[in-house]
Length: 335
Image (cartoon, rainbow, N blue to C red):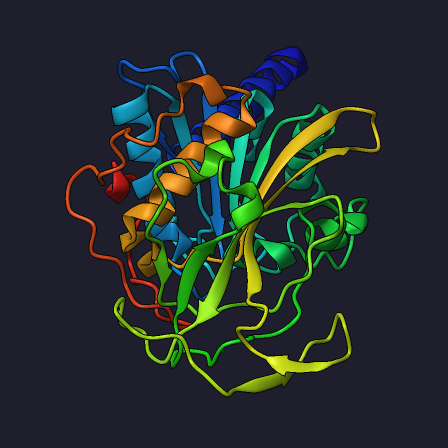
């Protein structure tokens, strides 16, 4: 009888464990790649920021990559105990084990405080040399308060190339006009990305000397795409300690690095401080990120600057704000 009870309880525990895994799996969204050069490659897109609506733009990018370029894409979310998307839950990331099979990871994170079991999947992917694309607040992706991975609190600064510094432009008042860095105008990521505008403001940033700056961001006088660069506005640059005109020189807003990690593998890294969901109304920004995926995977020969980066279906992003996320939405609603 005791033996039978043990078998019963063991079977129940296994069923509950399997149920938990399946439930977690269903809290992410998978887009199966169609025909295209990305066939056989797995891109994992990880959303989790409270303000800039990464839970809206990453499914859009995942569908472009899958439907138009052939990549298998998995989008992960922060959720509440009802399984609804809740970017304010800094401890949540769904189906983190998907990162174990990632060929490239796109993160749009802010001050995440993941448990060790979730951080392990990200750390392992990074340490095996998986390319990483960091969007907007990913310069300050983690704020781990416990556990074994607190060194990742400096992932933005030490790996991507910058941490949180300041809003260089007026937040929600001034936009960002992308200007290609002349010395690197032939970089593959920039192919076809000739017109880039973000209605999120320019961040202050000073990437390290080993970074390749691709684009700078002119501070503009409004959030409209046709807004003009501001003139006569000065601020103190924290990196140089000097007061300067905000657009002379303009802040870097997109750059790459190729950096050896502590395990001896080299990661290709692409970071842009643009990346609010509304920023991705800009075809040029969408193209840069799609190009960045190909570059990160060493597939530069597939970039021609003419690939289709049109969203699949309607894309009507929510303007950024804290607590401005759509309530009651579940990951499956993005399928």
